[in-house]
Length: 299
Image (cartoon, rainbow, N blue to C red; front, top):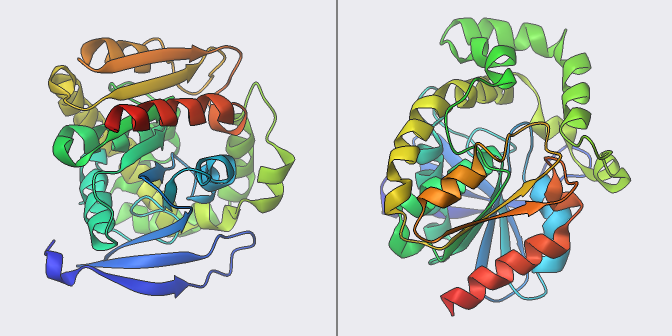
């Protein structure tokens, strides 16, 4: 990706109910990154996880963080209104590079990254890949090591070129309308999906054939990517905070974030008692305090 090709587009208009107004950065070669921003101060980049779009992080964290920071929430490549290349950009390492180039295009230098779940893996890869251009990483219930996961079974078949293009439209019109609402609610367990999220999240931007193909690619591509990341944690040169809920039913934080933090020279892991996977929707106070701690270290 060549720097001269980077240019911000005007705000994108979405037909999805509840969608936040976005701007889009064109990276060339079919790659774009859609983002929303608010506030002033040091830059904090929010990166969402699986089956989500930027509104997930925006609805939960922007109101609090924007009081002190320039908050930028992105649609991960291939998700929301961002676009990526098929079979090339699935790895969290590639997604970190794409987000890095997009942030440079809009004048963001050395941001602090906050990533949830798969987005936490992307944030960690950004810190490992661009240590001099990362102020710090806050990973919320992140995937850190390879493991067998449900999404590999549910979405993995759509990864296969050719087969995925056939399966995705069929499943989008048959099983997905029943499956996805169950998954969206299940990832909040043992808590209940907040009413504000249910009413304001644009579920249309987290579904559909192309996005489900991207989910399949993510699910399959994460194994080699996390194997590479695990070997690099001991060399991590940026401060890292990891938060994990004690009641998380989606990610085993003891075997993921807690172990990864132990391997990182500047890593720290904290349990969030009683919290499930979507802890950023219920413990904004802890997330904001962790962001402030990392920002103070930067200062």
